[in-house]
Amino acid sequence: MWTLQDAKNRFSAVVAEALAGRPQQVTRRGKPAVVVLSAEEYQRLVSQAALGRESFADHLLAFPGGDLPRMEARPRDVAL
Image (cartoon, rainbow, N blue to C red; front, side, top):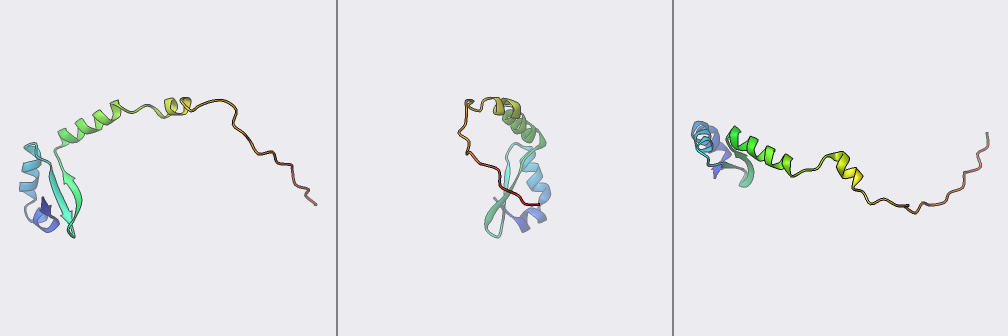
């Protein structure tokens, strides 16, 4: 794990470690901020996430059908 200042000062080392297959965590003010990983690993994660996700249309079509109760409302009387 790197502090932000150390990661800035040694960015080449951070990148080298990420390219070697070891994602590098960077903290900011003592809290986890970002992870640096190789582009190859990033693409693998994005592709893997996309495979397990249904389309938005499929999500809408899976909505339980049937009649939904609706509130009965009468129109207001509007004076012109």
